[in-house]
Length: 217
Image (cartoon, rainbow, N blue to C red; front, side, top):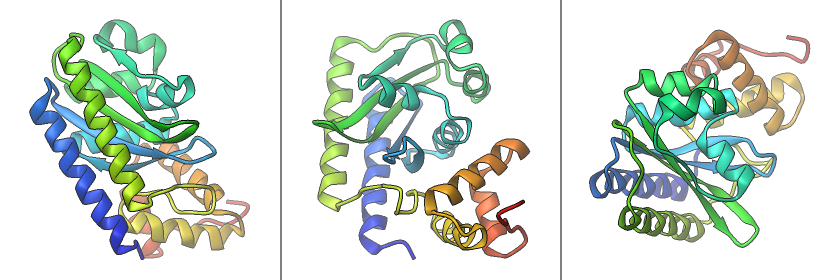
């Protein structure tokens, strides 16, 4: 079960993502939390397209939020068609196909502690203005406050934040393979990548026992 407080945090962050779309020249916004092993899990999104673009970064292991965590600083790409294919050969085409032309990632960081990343997507190419950057940083600070207030923390011994079925599926796969939660999520993510499928769909099949994993499978 997902704790009730976690549900509340996710709802609050979804509203923040919706405000980001309303306040900035953005067509989408999403927020992912990061684990100590640099894995990512979707926590909140403003809309289904943003949710999918956040999830793809987790599945593919590349994208603005991955780079933002690695660099410890914002990643601002105003023209994905020009700069994206070399930087993110698998992720950039998916973003363009989804109708997005620019992306901006802001680390959610407190000192050395990395909580996650807030991503913005816009439909037309172009950089954010100085005033828009200030607003984006303010929203990122709000996200940090919400996460800290909610006590949300992801580590190797916790499920990745996301749809409730993904929590349950991760636990079931952990038992099936006799491994850790992190190893279970890695197996689910690899399956999603190989079969080009949504994590939520795979999680549903695991929970309904249509799909199972074992140590050798």
